[in-house]
Amino acid sequence: LEIAILGTGAVGRALSSGWVDAGHRVTLGSRHPDRPRSPLAAPVTDLATAAASAPIVVYAAPWSAASELLEQIGSLNGQLLIDCTNPLLPRLEALDPGAKPSAAEWFAGRLPEARVVKAFNTVSAATLASPRYATLPATQFFCGDDLDDKRQVAQLIADLGLEPIDVGRLSIAHCLESLALLTIHLAVHHGQGDCVLKLLRRAAGAPIQ
Ligand SMILES: NC(=O)c1ccc[n+]([C@@H]2O[C@H](COP(=O)([O-])OP(=O)(O)OC[C@H]3O[C@@H](n4cnc5c(N)ncnc54)[C@H](OP(=O)(O)O)[C@@H]3O)[C@@H](O)[C@H]2O)c1
Figure 1 (tube, helix red, strand yellow):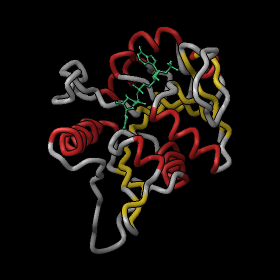
Figure 2 (figure 1 turned 135 degrees about the vertical axis):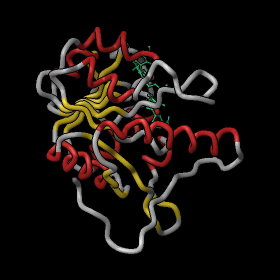
Figure 3 (figure 1 turned 90 degrees about the vertical axis):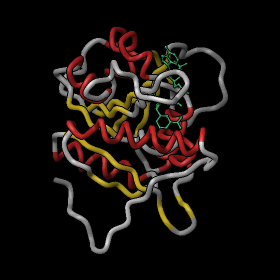
């Protein structure tokens, strides 16, 4: 697949590295494409060029930068936007009340010509890079409204070695954002360190629906 990742931070690095290893063609978008930095797994260009370069665009920049960054890239024409953000307040103790009903739906409202899937927000960048906990793969929840998009995102999750779990339509994204808040609370404020919430079930679960 051809994928553009906006943001060269911890999440952009983990996703690009894993997907290049899985054989995908990745371009990273940056505010400073020419600035010296530690090596990246994929080529870097400016944000607008990256966003126009692929049918799948991953938003891996801070929530606080979203308005400004969308102005720089313009519209996404018929593209899939994967929203990784956690719309947290600066001290990581609560969700931004401005992200109502969710950051994912805010993106969908701002980009009516794109389709949005929420994913990669409920595990840490460290877990994206190293997804196994003992013998179990970390669970990566995702949601969205288009079945084909969700199949692609499920594959991209599996390509990183995580277990994809579809949680439903984009309107449930606020639950994934709250779930990330709980995980971050456990990791940062409650002594659990890097951790992940794992789905355990008694029988095989429902397919993507
Ligand atoms: N870190 C995690 O463990 C984790 C896990 C799950 C989800 N998330 C979410 O994923 C997103 C990326 O997380 P991250 O930890 O990779 O973030 P980060 O390291 O703080 O920043 C990601 C990148 O966004 C770009 N960026 C564009 N506009 C920016 C602005 N105005 N201010 C700062 N950076 C800007 C920067 O790349 P350039 O300098 O190249 O432009 C920066 O390196 C966030 O929304 C976060 O909530 C993070």
